[in-house]
Image (cartoon, rainbow, N blue to C red; front, side):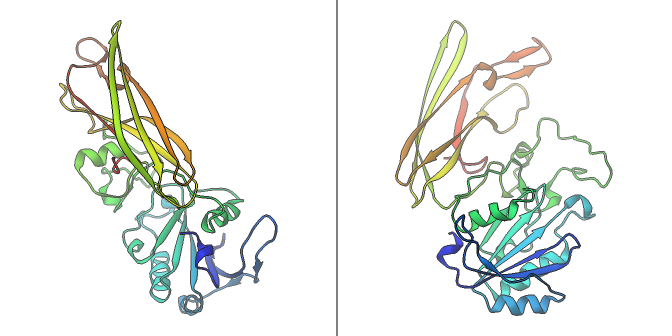
Length: 308
């Protein structure tokens, strides 16, 4: 839920460009009409002082910049993990904002905090954007373009490298396809993203036509906003080839569409699949895209794992 519904007194803990821990008090709430009153930012030298401040606030925000390519182990550095875990012990209303350009290993702290916001590298105006999201002026609607594993050990061997060269040896099993193929449970799947509302996926309808040797599959689904506020959802369509003469991924994203729904609104979403989206490249016989006769599963959902 947005912070405005629970906030009374809140501090923000972050790190500056010198990796010093800074802390500031927020009284009120930023808006286009009036700025929140802010105390001067202070440099905090001890974890104990951070925890003391956390105890005196009903909400804490921790902004943690992570640059995986500067960390040999590619884990969140121990100081950051310790800071998050210790603050969450004294203040359960601790939200963490991650500033990073790739997936971050969170398994050693995420169960100790109620919410995490992935800020990516959003530029110098990131603070205003995060503020609008955290306080509910904007309903977050982003979806992850990558898979967040539970541990970096779940990635293919050599996926991360301390050199400038990375070898992609997964073949067709790149990204979410790799985790599907090996049956690995992930922290956050490809396409995942929450908001301040909820969406209901209703019954799927499909029709197949094959005229003039042009195969088309029409897929329709209705989506309902079942939450209290307006929001956006990205409906994702995946295809699974049930039986194939060649090795194929468990499923592949073929279509997606972003829709906007008011509270209680219901909207129909339609997709058209053509032959090429069901085909594979036949490099042995025909040297062209080939659709083999057989069964295909059409799956719709809000991520590569959350299938309706």
